[in-house]
Length: 88
Image 1 (cartoon, rainbow, N blue to C red):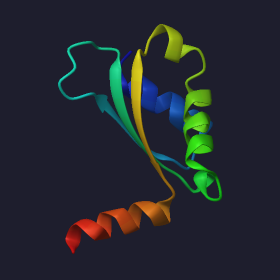
Image 2: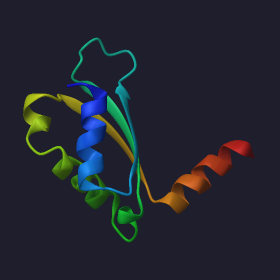
Image 3: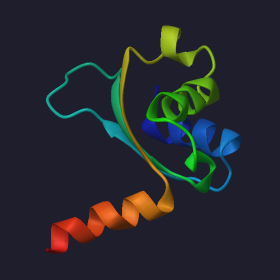
Image 4: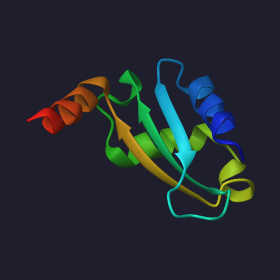
């Protein structure tokens, strides 16, 4: 599955999300992806729930078109804090 198609599916389910999906580094298969998802919808949710929200957005594609998905999920505040820590 093309990374841009995966981004579209996530954005449809989480309209306020900032999403970036890429092929996983070092993987030769097209079905190994890595995704960064930042959205206010994750506020107050556990990491497990955040990941479930993304998997729900991908519906049946996880069993047919995507073999593996490495997820990094953040609220906007968490993302800004993580980005700031690289500047220190």
